[in-house]
Length: 637
Image (cartoon, rainbow, N blue to C red; front, side, top):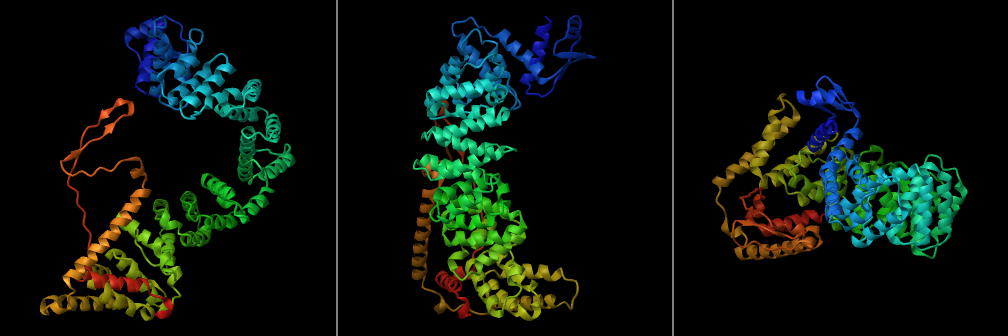
């Protein structure tokens, strides 16, 4: 009776997905428990408190054990289903309640075979097996190998995650050796993961023994065993504190295997060299030599390593690695995506901003930016947190002599507009402070040619007033650009912005306030002319020409959209079906025979943005004007 009460309490806490270890007892429950000896719990007042989660789990599984009929016809199926149910209800990732439950049936059923025969998914089966291993009295090597092999073949090369197996083997070096020797008897891809687990576990208890085994296996030049041994060797050296044991032999074998005629061995040796570069100084010269030879595998491996190990950005050779990696990103979207992730790391460290800038220009000239917009967007998302850096990169790419380089500044502008970012886009003072008049005019032409959003136009042009000695250098230019260009297209918006800025200046004799007054006066005169002066029809463009031009422009835009769809992951895995009528949509899901989904109903959606006034009046002339600004050269100013 005592056990039943405690089991029910533990079960209630478990079902509540609670991390609580205490439960308030009723008078009847308390009276029963006071008569019995407590095991794994104590009574404090009217509360039952479990000593630990393990003790609570013990009572939980005893509850499930008492509720499960292990003598029925389909007992194995029922037991596995119950274990899966327990696993799904577990709250924390370190819990192995389901494995403890399965261990109660270790003498009654073949748990390994029952898991393989069950309807569990590969994820459920491997997690349950791992938990069972933790509590099993003995690890049967043959059953373990059979389980791994079957799962691998049945579920498209799936291997699973066996953390608890690794922990148990750590305390049992003899079992590690048994697994390794069993693998030698039949070297197969299906059970290679067991070889990994055994060696990593052995390394924790006996580093020297693990290194000896790996060095011997590498020398066998087996196309499956040797590459894996090299990879494990590199990882063990990387994560170990003391790496003096057979250090010279390790260096020699990695260096020699890089030139192996067996490609898999060569690639794994390169991976090992990259993994050990922080622990083995001699690997630096090997990696640098491979980069100079433009070894694509070394470049890809190193880039991926830097992406997964941010601390490598502080390595002595990192400034020489990155330009080499960037130069190799031509027609390689996967590599360029890694590079932009690494750029996000560099953005955090101001001392690396110069390297980031140089590498960004290399990537742009390789055409990698235009090929991988999503990676660039992810990078912009990160550097928006660093306004100084974002404005500097924007300015530098905008004023480059090659108009194609402006693709990055255009993507920045588009990203900020689409995502309604609060970042104020301005020209970087570090870049423009020492500009000549010719430089300023070239910058303004680029801004007018590539930026169309009114808020960004105003913030960029007004930022020119922040340079040194602005009253003599940029006042007249800013005034002319605002009146003759921006106010022509967005008169109302410009007036509102200038009035707001003017009113924020309290000193009436302020030179900038005077400039704002002059700008407002000229714009108001311009606005007055709209109603005072007649429109001359003869100067308007032909409606047929305007329509034909717009039609061709739409065709070009539609073609670009189609090309973007071809590269889109969503359109690769889904079929696009235009919704021609109706008020909703649904889809058919054949996963677990889910059938048809609930309908998703359409709702009104609207958005608005401003069009330049001159574009509406004369779209042909407006595009010609933009082309002139975009193609402007600094030496023709």
